[in-house]
Image (tube, rainbow, N blue to C red; front, side, top):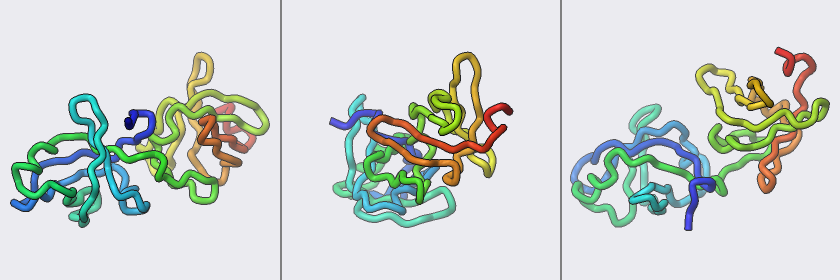
Length: 173
C-alpha cells in the first residue's frame, strides 16, 4: 500500500483533452520527465493509486498532456479532473552531487550543521524566489537556510537527515 509519506505532490490534472483519453496536467515539478519512473499516483477515495504513463507531451512551461494506460476515452479522462498528482520519492535523485529533488521531498528532514549541530526540522520550502530556502523550525523560532547543494555534506534518506556546512554567520541572520 502506498502512503502519503512515500510521495510528493507534483501537480494537478485539469480536464480531458480530446476524445482519446488525454488529460491536461498542470505541474509544479517536471520530475516525471527527469526520471525513469513509469507511473504517477493519484488519491482516489482516500487510497493512493498508481497509474502507468502511456505517453505525455509538453504543452507549455507548466502544462503537459498525459495519456495513461487504460484511459481511452473522454469519459474515462473526466474521472481525473482536479485530482492531485503525486510522484514516488523512491525514484528521486537526492545525492549531494545532483541536489535536484523537489522541495516537498525534504519536509520533515532534520537539518544538522557540522559546526552548530542539530538546527531543527524542515517545515516548509520557500520557492517564491530564485533562491530556494528551507524553513527550519528551531525551538521557538524559524531559520531560513538556502537549499544550496554547495552547503550539503550528506543526505541520509533512511534517517531523514541533511548534514550541511552552512557558512559562518548565516544561521545568525
